[in-house]
Amino acid sequence: MPAARNTQGENLPRSRERTGYQHPPLLAEKGARVRKGVAVQLTWGQAVREGAAQLQLAGVDSPLHDAQELATAAGLPPAHQAPSSNAVSPQQLAEFRRLLERRIRREPLQHILGTMWFRYLELEARPGVFIVRPETEMVAQAGIDYLKQRYDRVRAHKAAMETGAGVANAAELSGDGGLAGTLQPLPAELITVDLFSGSGAIALSIATELAELRAPHLEVVGVESSAVAFASAERNNARYGNPVHFIQADALAPLPDPFEVQLRGRVALVIANPPYVPAYHQLSPEVQADPKEALWGGGADGLDIPLRTIARASELLAPGGALVMEHASEQAEALRAAAVQAGFTAVSTGRDLAGELRWLQAER
Image (cartoon, rainbow, N blue to C red; front, side, top):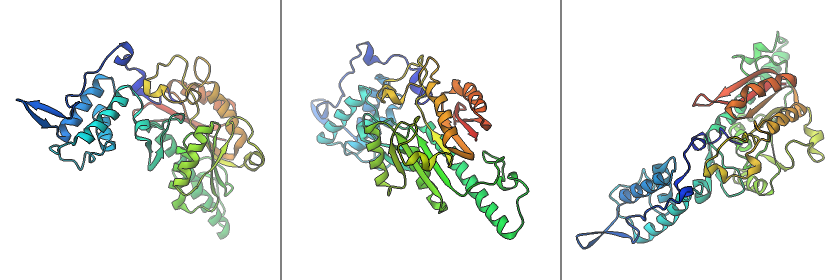
């Protein structure tokens, strides 16, 4: 899943830990500074600043943010609640330093904290499960926007039929002519399938954020092959009231009975964050902590799995359904061409906040 997933890490110089770098001990290693022979306890501000300096030396991209998060995990108040002059107890300082040591070794912050955030969700984070990253939040948003447009069009079409007004064409119902702008009248089902679901972040975002629509035909299914990730998705699902049906299966193969029969040709949206990292990408230590099967797309250009995902989506989608799929920026042109060849229309590429080409969107 990302080459582009963690863009800040890919072009970093080799971390100092790989070249024999040894970080100096915290000035507060023994719990206090000594000033003119008198022990002086560190304040919250001093401890965090010194921790941030250690993380910066270790090559961490967001040293102050991470130091603040680790301080909170060590029992200190959050940054917005903690006066910089607050004293830090020896016990808090010892725990802060222990957590800091783990981050200096480039263990992902999410693994240290045990949690990760995705849009409005707080999710479990553990080794063996892909760590969600901010750029994927916009991929989820593209899927949510499509489903909202589709739901509005279904309701408008139903109302027009009930009043006998009819529908001149589908574009009258799509309003802004977005992703759903050229579709013909749609079936009422709003079935969404999240392939390579991982922690369940995308599927849960769609299910929870669209719950407000009270759409009677909204169903969200997540497909994940890894037993570790599937178990994590199930725990995350339970936390939010089990709005998603997760299936442990190969995302690129027919689903076990009866799911394939129930879903094939009936899905409104296939959304996916597949493995897509090209073989030539250099990844940061944090990204390398993700499971390899969730990262590398196959082949020198990383396109093997994304291309198979397009083919799989075409099997699942109903006429007029849509595919939204994350990819590396340099893969955009090849994937648009593959989608057109597979019979998709309205093919385009979405950009993230940094302007990077980030996801394919297309209609069946």
